Amino acid sequence: MADNLPSEATGDWWRSAAIYEVYVRSFADGDGDGTGDLAGVRSRLPYLAELGVDALWFTPWYLSPLADGGYDVADYRVIDPAFGTLGEAEKLIAEARELGIRTIVDIVPNHVSDQHAWFRAALAAGPGSPERELFHFRPGRGENGELAPNDWPSQFAGSTWTRVEDGEWYLHLFAPEQPDLNWAHPVVRREHEDVLRFWFERGVAGVRIDSAALLTKADGLPDFVEGRDPHPYIDQDEIHDVYRSWRAVADEYGGAFVGEVWLPDSERFARYLRPDELHTAFNFNFLSCPWDATRLRQAVEETLAEHAPVGAPATWVLCNHDVTRTVTRYGREDTGFDFAAKTFGTPTDLELGTRRARAAALLSLALPGSVYLYQGEELGLPEVEIPLDRIQDPMHFRSGGRDPGRDGCRVPLPWTAEVPAAEPWLPQPEDWAAYAADIQEVDPSSMLSLYRTALDLRRHEAGFTGSALSWLPVASGVLAFARSEGLICVVNLAAEPAELPAHSLTLLTSGPLDVDGRLPQDTAAWLRA
Ligand code: NOJ
Image (cartoon, rainbow, N blue to C red; front, side):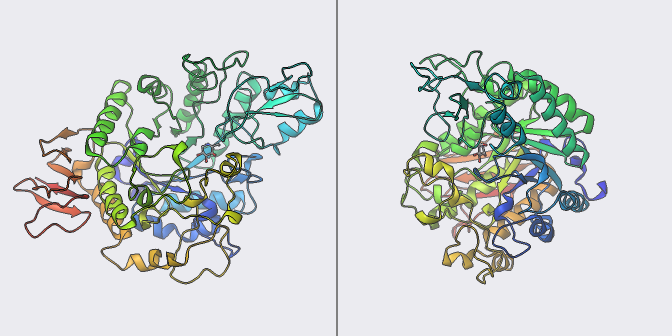
């Protein structure tokens, strides 16, 4: 079985893997009901192998009422019937592995669904019960307990507290359908270690940890005091104890973690990556960075500098199921990404955005570390403006309708140019036929062809391995760096065309060179000296 795996991938494969995020509900629809499922994924494994990815990260596929797209888990050991069965998941994991592709599951430890057995039992058992101790239930403030127990704002806007019939309040950092677990409770810790084992025993090679810096809360759940850092529900020191015991579980199986750790402070971020904690964490500084040479170089340098002391590899991410799709973002006037800035109707130039996204793909795939691709990124799909009456994301509703939410990057993939037999759960724009995988597959200039070629080179060129990166002197607005074995990546963000290094062989470019063989604006090249 290991024969199909790239040689360097047999040990610390997670140090350099290309990982493809599968948002199951929108990837491929196997049973023709308009919703993606495991049968659909299994039928598209050859596509993923051909694309050249090393691992698949599946967003939550567990039993869920889908109040937050599956990040509200009712049972971590059961596959949602809309997606398939546990038996199918096991087959999928094994079939992917036969093709040299590892599987990463998504564990959501901060909260459960309000339909999870524990929460239902807690509601039924009432105040003061041991069942309620697994969550954060509190009496309210004010004369009659009518005020929330503290002032914490929800990640989805509004309060983090909801009052139940008997008068107590419970904490939820996200939607009310996602009650937070009490991580000071030993039963909560034990249960999650069991869940990790459950999935490692089914052959998964890695686990993505949702909201990884939020689990433990400051004692007494105090109000937020301006200037005090960290916030009482973010990055509490006790959390590292949780991850040290998780690491011991992962080490029993040779499994790897990737944490969703959004923290601006690089020293605090790196603590999660100490050798006895998480193997990797998402790099959101790079993901949020505007299309600007100075800022990008700074993001790369800071990333490498913060990872080096703990010996962890960096990760590079351009988009995921929570953020505006890359071609749309890079075609806007403001090319940075900020959660608070998501608005309806922001104009974008898709041609420009696509040119930049192609260059950004070569940039991120050339950097040392692992790299994440989000389904549809390889097709160059744009963000979709979903009609108001079809929006499903709680983020939209919780913002009072101001924020369009995240559905625009979650529209089911166009596999063929034909209109899908069943209406997809989110509407596909009519012009999406042009993005269809079967059309792009036979077009050497398509985004899909670019990704295939780049992933193939990244896997087979020796220069992409290791952690070396040295910057080369270039004109302002240009990024150029060398990896090992004479491998060079040049990205031109300036208006002036850039000269490519002399005596080098061009391996791949994200767009055509000009008549003088120079690299035009918003174009990247890979070369061998
Ligand atoms: C991060 C996930 O990526 C996002 O989709 C989800 O809404 C929140 N965590 C809450 O689980």
